[in-house]
Length: 173
Image (tube, rainbow, N blue to C red; front, side):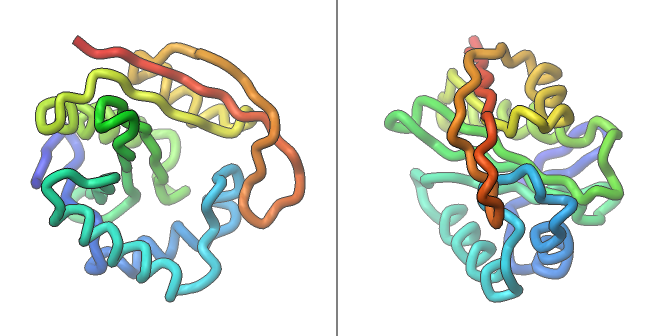
């Protein structure tokens, strides 16, 4: 897979992206509002990237992660987990903080959603975010997603604080 937008390229996330994935995935500031990050160490990062490579080899994967490249520099990733017998895609994303605020996440996510719709026929997309993550909420809204609910009980990794989580949803034709 190789996808191109106006400014970005998307390729399968793999172990070749280890150094840059390690940078953003272990950075507490970059990941403070995420459930499954920051990663604890390089071994955890490498194990995840190896799992990503395996998923790309499957005819019907459980999830796919795409590396986001800007001028061939890896700046983040967008993922889609396949749910509900592969009829729903749950979006996720992360961008190195040096690239925040440029619209890259929404651009990459829209492109990846189109690919997943064409490849797997996904017609419903959902995304969750910490209710305090205004940037992710903006991404969901830019993608045309609609607010569905706010729930409590979210715990971000390495935090005992109970937070709220928002859910957004989009149906595509």
